[in-house]
Each structure stands twice: as C-alpha cells, then as structure tokens.
Image (cartoon, rainbow, N blue to C red):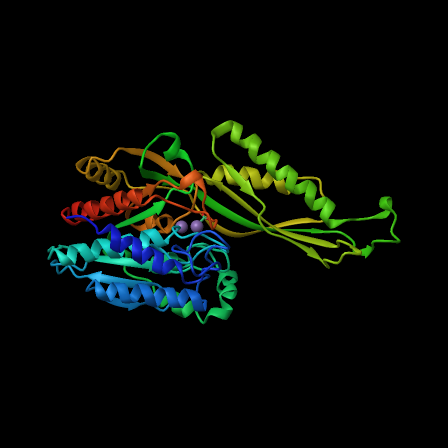
Length: 405
Ligand code: GLV
Ligand code: MN
Ligand code: MN
C-alpha cells in the first residue's frame, strides 16, 4: 500500500493557490509574495473548504469544532473510541510558503484515503486534523491544537481573539477527552538544513523546542527633531537599539553553555512614528527558543536587568519544550527501515502542533528536507520525492500504531 504522489502533489498545489499573492499563470503557487492565510480570514476559510471537499472525497466523516479545527475520520472497529490523530495546520505566516503545515495536512488526508481505497480495517478511529492558527502570527500560537486538548487560555489571549467570534465558550467546547487520543502523528518540512548536511531524506523528531514570546516597551520623550540638541534627547529608539543588540549578545553567550538557544526581535513599532519627531516610545517583540525553560528564564532576566531607563517587558506566550515519545519514534524508525529509508534522529527548532499534543498523548513527528533550509518564505521548497517518502512513512507508521493497543 503506497500513497499516490501525483494526487498528493496536485492537492497541495491546489491548496496553495488560496492566499497566493503572485503570478496566477504560474504552474505552482510558489515564489513572488508567497502565501498569506491567516486563521479565520476569507482565504483561510476557502482553503479549509477545499480540504473539507478532499476529506469527503476520501470517504471520511467530516466535522468542524467551535474553535475552527477541521476533522475527517475513518472509523475504527474498536468500540472504545480511541483515536490516532494525524494532523498539522493550513494557516501560514505572512508571505509564507507552500509546504509549512499544508504538507502534513495533505499527507494525513492522502494516507486515510489510501487506507479507505484499500478497504483497510482499522482498529482505532483514524482522524486527519487541520488545527487552526498554529503560527501565532495574529492570534495565540497553537490555537487549535491547544483548544483540542482543553488547554487553559489566559484572559489576554481570549481578548486577542475578540474579532474572530471564537471566545472562551467555543474554546472550551472544542476540548476532547484526551484519554481517548492514543497517538498523534505529524509530517512536516524540516525548515532547516540539518538533513541536507547529514545527507538524509527523513528526520525522526526527538524533541521540539520551547518558545517564549514577550512584548517589550522602551519609553523616551517625544520632541521636535529639529530644535532638540543631540545631548538633550531621550530617544526611545536609540535605547531600544541598545537592548536589541544586547539580546543578540546575551543569547549567543548563553549558547556557549548548552548549544541551541535562539532569540529574535521580529516586530518593531515606533511612537509616534513621524519623520520629524524623536521617538517617544518603541514597542518590539522578543522571541526566545530553547528546549529548557530554565535557559529562557536566564536570558530574559539578563535582558530585564539591562541598564536601560524606561524598559518594560511582559510575557505574552509560552509553550514549553517537549521530548517526543520514544516508543512512537521506534515505530517510525521501524516503518522507515521497512521502506528502506535512511533517517536521522533530530530536534526541531520550529514549533509544531505536536508540542501541545505531546503534553497529552504519545506523539511522533517526521521531517522531510527543506531546500536550502528556507522556510516562512515564498521560496520554501521540498522535492516531490521527499514529499512521497514522508507521506509513505506516515501511512506505514499509522498502520503500525493502529495494530498496537
Ligand atoms: C512555527 O512555525 C514557528 O516555529 O514559529
Ligand atoms: Mn508549521
Ligand atoms: Mn510555520
């Protein structure tokens, strides 16, 4: 039993046109300004309808939960209602690529379609899941998968969702009985260069980094840019620049101890933001990633202790680092060996829906290579042979997990 690459490829390309900002006469929606599909947007909902259609064509039972997650189920023989969830997301970053998240969703639907076509008698319910709002660009990250596992959302997070029609009630109603989730599986592009460096086509993920996001504010004094002498200014941007350089230094220094912390300032906003006014306020994001929360805490403490007047930092979001289930990793490795695929065990520096899922169930992830390690970019690319390998590995692993109690 094998997946149908031609079909999977066509479906992935069709999905990619929703939210693509570029030349519509191209063969593939890649390059130009890439794909922007923020959760709950019109393009997102159109893309979701497309996935729903595919799920129906595959013969799955389809439904959506109040948070906006979409599911397609291949019912199992067992009466116990235990499920194996195979999922990912179809929301993108701004000007994102064709594969991030979408590959995992399309591979899940394709795998279940092939099982159904082959009259496979599954024991457990097999569920293809499209989790909404994984990226955390506009709304809290891992939104859908967190709702699915019944995670608690803070008042601040619920406020951020105000324009979506999804509130506390909808999030709560979307929670399932997590004891019924036997396993979670996700195929994803690597979004880095490790596989390429090690000349492997398959990664088996051992752990996913933790992510902490903060809002920083540096306050200065807005004043006339022409009449205020250089030594009489309190320029919020100059002070923020010092903080940003220090963040880089602090993270690199901590890295010396233990390896793989990263820190990024990706958003910056000036107040009042006028060409002839000295900045009175600078607001910027700080994102820190590491497997261990302790290291993230060390970094943020050093940043908070910088001698910069008017600096305030507030934590916005935290998802802890997780190690994925060893037994599931073994099943994936066994499936890879059966398929004759060479693999590498590795950590993930990107966040995934598998992070919250791993808090409640035995979860596993498969990576396929990203060309030149590029992702969160219109240039994101994965070779079709690798897409095929990744999807076949998911199909084989699902069968193995389904045959285990
Ligand atoms: C999610 O894709 C992230 O790692 O930011
Ligand atoms: Mn992703
Ligand atoms: Mn992403």
